[in-house]
Amino acid sequence: MLEFCIAAAFLLVPLSGWLRATRSHRRRVDALAVRVHVNGIRGKSSVSRLTAGILREAGYTPIAKTTGSAAVVIDRFGVDHPIVRTGPATILEQLAIIKEWVDDDVDALVIECMAINPNYQRVCERQIVRSQIGLLTNVREDHQDVMGYTRPEIARSLLNTCPENGLLVTSEGDPEIIAVIREEVERRGSELIVAEPSTVTPDDMRGFSYIEFEENVSLGLEVARRLDIPRDVAMRGMWSAEPDPGVLRIENTVVDDVRVTWANMFAVNDRESTIAVMKRVERLAEPQTCTIAILNNRLDRQARALQFADIAARDLTLDRVVTFGAYERVVTERLLANGMPSAKIINLGDERDPTWSEIVQEMILDQGTDHVLIAGMVNIHTHQAEQLMEFFEGADTAEVLFKDVEASTTEPASHSEAA
Image (cartoon, rainbow, N blue to C red):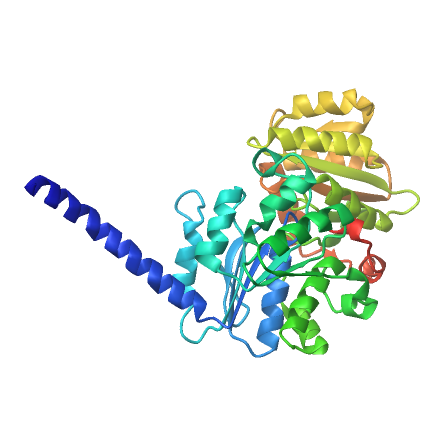
């Protein structure tokens, strides 16, 4: 009996501490006037930033967190604070961020869902965020090994962050997927609003200093409408919000008399979004432009590498395909099997490990055209891609081509162009 009592005491001490921490977290979160949980396949980080910008402009004191291209906390003044991790990312990070950043002055929280596993998404919503407003950007085919192999299955997985008895806003436009969303939302006793990108005007889009998407803006406007925030206030807030590092930027520079247009699409890594964004990028091509896609492949993403080899060969119109990173041999074999001529393929990744001069020579100077349009795809982090981004996006000679892309940012997009 004595041994049992001692063991029970040791168990009760951490249990009581966990209960106190849980109650403290719940009080802290439930005291917030606005709680927004952002989920979806593409655009989560951008939508989180836009929504936080709206709240700041409207007089709220929000804290936001994104986990997309860069894991950061965005403070009440809109300043980014990078999250330093000492180990693998876990959903417990959400608890720690809220504990550290949400004080008595903060009255709003906008948080991007960092979980992929549906069970973890459910825990994030019900135990951590407890949102009143859920935002679902879109449903795409990605993370299928965890979320499901069909878009309806993926939609149901993503809707684990739908609030109970709250509001779910989505800019997904596929009627089949909307029907699934509506069923899941109603099952949770919540209200569904389908945002309409067509309500976003060309003047709205001209206020952004980078390529934003009407679908993302329409979600922010619906949040503003629900919170009785005037439309002009909402737009000012979105325009002033610092963009995510993964937003689509277009850079222009000159390399040995060859004009180069660089489109950083590394953060766009599903088929549907890639095709839609590439359509916009292709508008920058000229009659004599050489259009190049970089397939930038990480060692831990073989399935994605093969998927993008299929996309490049079957869905895109390209003059050259350059391979960076891992899996060059299998990606090249996949491109050839899809009918791409070997003369169009340039291997500049890990198996060859070229110098930066060799990359510039073969990818740009050897094309024999006055203008080269390069789109980086698939993943962000490889040695070659980091060199490329440092050159194009850090060089003093680079110029952001806002005027050149104005047409692509001011025409209302269809739902199928969501990214």
